[in-house]
Image 1 (cartoon, helix red, strand yellow):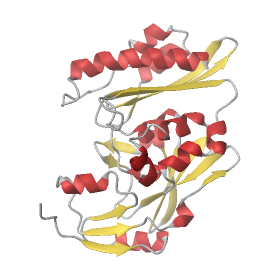
Image 2: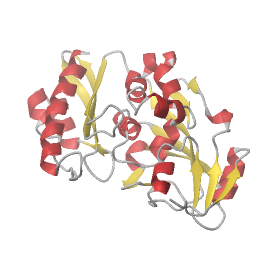
Image 3: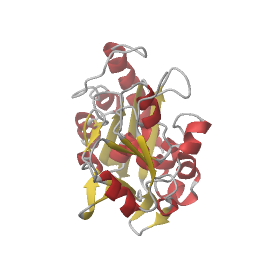
Image 4: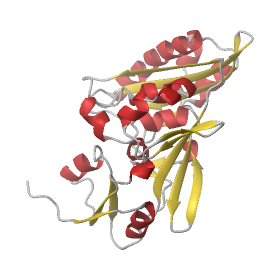
Length: 280
């Protein structure tokens, strides 16, 4: 196959990357390339300029920032999965990173790339929703912070401006009485999830004060299951909440399964995840 033509440049700093994004044409950032390169191979993406940001080491870190943990956008999945601070403060994030793809993908892929791509089948996009992460982006006018629930705007579309790049992911530290779980189903271990459910519950006095349930591969964007969250935090049983996770979803039909199959599967996964989170 003859590749589509594109120009290539290497960013020497975040500011340099932003300046290149501000130019004309379809400019894309390349870090690990685990999402962009397959899209280019299938002609789903045809950038006129490819900017390599993989050498910006100052965007690879995990830091204690008081009420939250700050994760640099270019932190590799394997580093997110293995970081002891993150595992202790917000274990769902490190757990989800450890379940992305296979060893090769986790070695090259970055948390920022996975989130900024806006894939509705992304583990880490969903985990950002589940833990109410904040996403720090930088552009020509400086930095701004976008809540995860306002970041994903459509299939493979986000609130990033054309000259902005994601530079940091901020995840809150989970309280002591917080339980979490992630259940997903896929045909092969390295495949995208056919469906997935992330659950975070905040418990007190034997009940659930608040619940967060994020869904993978159940619509055009990563989704929150609002009706199921309300049922669980309102005293509903795990089965009652699980039955409501399909409300507001638009599962697709593809080689991995029909829409009807996904709708049934996500309820089964939700039941398992809710029970695990409540027991955690």
